[in-house]
Image (cartoon, rainbow, N blue to C red; front, side, top):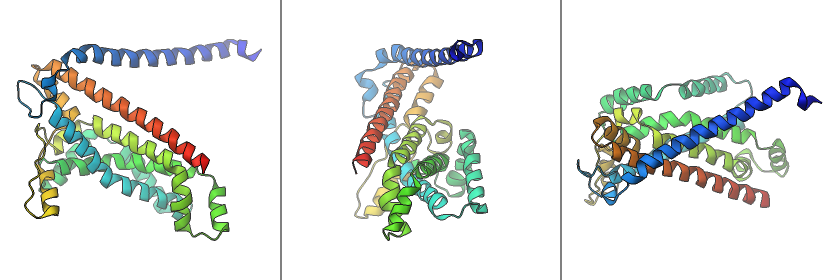
Length: 291
């Protein structure tokens, strides 16, 4: 029988060995972080104000949330809109489409330190925004844009053509078909890309050190009667995210325990994001199937 052939047995064993090795590495990594980091978790680590004594991560946690929101506000509409154009509007074989896809694939392979250098030269220096959250957000938006665009494009391609044909057959225009038929069906895939982008933003260090800075402080909003200016001005202040905070703590060599505690919090956030994405995708699939 085929499943008893030496080659088949070898391939099956190789697959099982790869799976076991991968699981072992992941479990070992997570276990090591938890063993070293959980004892370091205390109330001082979550103090509102950072000092050299407590090594609080609270300000970095808040800055991480701000960075994620700002980056997605910039990158998500552009990435999703670009994917809609490539899939639904651009003609097949269009040279512009090929150039855009080649550019996106090239951007996906560029090291994050190069993005950080570009962000420093353009946003920090040329635009004169300085080390600030907004400089970091625009740099991260450029980083995650190819990821959002490509995952959205694949999600749109996965929608059966019969959906489009049925909508056109009922007299709906292309715009209505895209927003009422195609996008709802592709939402789980689009959401998966956005969740992956969030994970990259949360875990990024090099690019943000060059652009957002390493100040462990939360932007302070002061209301002076000009809502737009009062909202935007604090975003031009420097602030470190969790990954940058963890790097800074470990680099100094005096607060290694704090770095491990920060790693536990960062790990919990990543696991929570993945769990939330899986739950949301399943719910959306049920809703789409029910409709």
